[in-house]
Length: 274
Image (cartoon, rainbow, N blue to C red; front, top):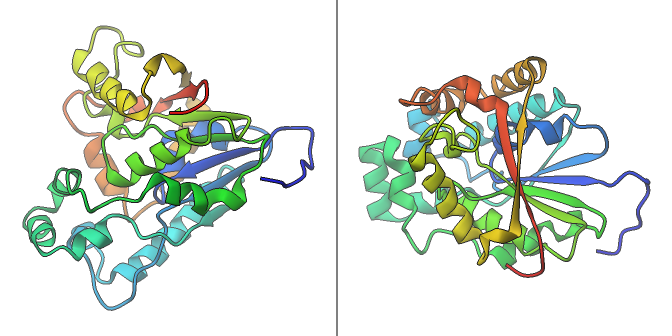
């Protein structure tokens, strides 16, 4: 982390696990003034000639071509906020899951259960230290870093979240954003909504307890996008034609509503160590 600061205005780095997470979860950061860099971790393109059952369920005939299309969609979506993506080459968890016969068979039987089928497979995941090394060249001491909080327990989100908290003390500030739409699966938490929602609160609290040993180190901020900002966010979201139907299905769950996407939440991580 020895690069020279070339502007008086601090730089911002948004770490996105997948090709849409930054737009879904941190639009207020992407559309803010100043220098914002977006790095997508799991944007690797697999070898051509096969399709995973998850990709097939989303409409793909070849996973490599599907990933190339998703990369192009990400570039179009981020351009709406005036940002240019940086795509790293790590393969998202669906690909190592495809190589495990019992997991592959289970996903083929019901792709809608993908997350519940991979979340407890101990061999599926990336060491946080590996991810820190992977993004090292994009870091510098005056940087504000935003990454996922790991809500929803998706292995890729979980591992990037653990990498992000390891940056405390090495960059100017570290912020963990609420993973959308995962954090909305039980509706708005009580501290956003009009009334108590213990299920949503627990969903978030469990993720934060897994993120840091002492959740008191986390200072919460809630951002409410105005109508104009929300409309631009929806325009960007609709660039992701490959994955949009799955997101829309998540937002059609009982107790959820697309308007909830106007609420973006992040926690500033204080202190040294996780």
